[in-house]
Structure formats: structure tokens, C-alpha cells
Image (cartoon, rainbow, N blue to C red; front, side, top):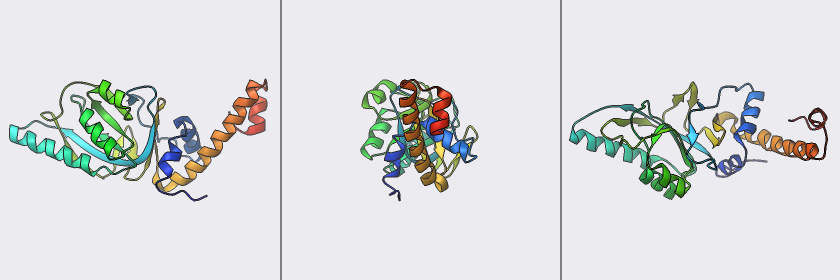
Length: 221
């Protein structure tokens, strides 16, 4: 069955990252998981969408340069399209690179979430708004005098994982997985099949079938 471009994120969002990772492993793509230090703000957050990568770097500047820094960040936010996940390689461990107003705008744009290899602030408000946000740390320190966006739409590398525009990002409590765009449809179909197989295994072991017997019957565990 063909996958419509706007249907793929919705279908991936129903699949656990553990299943996606297992299927990636089967195809020899064994290093597609972002560092385990990147965690959801709340345990129930999960998302899937097309990667929109952006990159930043630490900096300090004059008051006028700070205004330019903020304007650059706002231009980046405006460029994030619907059905995507913002993936920000902050290159920094000092400031908050995301916040409540950023999340509110992206939610209005039907952006599916944000993965920040850096920090957010306003964590409680973002959690209450249920905008899927995955971060490395929290801090109240504003980024404007300390950091700036360098570019967006170009590939970034986080923890040895390359993230390119249009790759599929799948994220839940277990972590964040990046599915290369060229194999996204194949990974999706295989993952959906594995979900069905695991459901059969789950039902079988609940009925008393041994784990080995269930594995031999359904080919999954």
C-alpha cells in the first residue's frame, strides 16, 4: 500500500521507538538513535514527523546584536513547516534554546514537536500545553545574549547521528530515533508488521505459551 506524504507521520506516531529501532537494526542501520540524555518533558509525550534541522552556536554581543539574534531565531521558527519536527543542534550547554512562546507558535503551525540537543525553559507550561518537546536539560537562562541560530534546513549531526531535512523523527519515552528518508516507507511497513506480530506474542504468553514457543511461532519477542 502506498503511503501518502501527509499520512506517514501519523502512522509512525503509533509505533513505539523500540519497534522502529529493531527494524532499523534488521536493515543494518544500527546507529540511528539520538543520545539518551535527550528526554521528553513529560513521560506521555510522543511524536513523529519530518525532520527540520537547525543549528546554533554560543555568542555574546551588543544590545543591537542581541536584537538581530532574536530576529534570526524568529525567522527560523517561521520556516518550520507543518508535519515536521524541529531538530535543533544547539552546540551549547548554557542557555535555553526553546520556550513556551516558541512551542505555541509551532503548535499553531501544526508542527509535530521539537527535539532540542540543548535546553528549554517554561517546561511546566509546555508540558501543560502537551506540545511534544524533547530536551537535554532545563534552565531559565535566556539564549538571546548567549547564543544564536547559525542556519537551518541543512543536515546536522547529534551524537553521531546525521539528521537531514525530510528524514523521519520518531520520539517517545524511550528516546528519539531518526529514520533516513530513503528507507522511511520500508521501515514503516516493516514496523507495522512487527507491531502486529508482537501483539500476537503478547496474547500468547498471557495464555501461558512459553516465550521460546511464542518466538518460534510468531518470529518476534
